[in-house]
Length: 80
Image 1 (cartoon, rainbow, N blue to C red):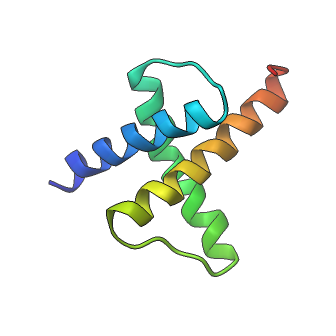
Image 2 (cartoon, one colour):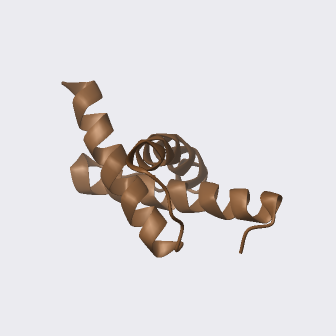
């Protein structure tokens, strides 16, 4: 059940991050961005003492992490 919930949260978070950052991508890309964003978000926010609990907290942390990944990707590969 944990994997299914991670995929759902990852999909939602990736989609939200794509909308916030005006980034276009398919469903699989959004899910991957959301899941990796969750890891990045937990590391970055955990370093400053912030954590997300529950489904909503996980989505928020994943969106922040996915936005960071999109921003880094755009900066490194020259997309604006």
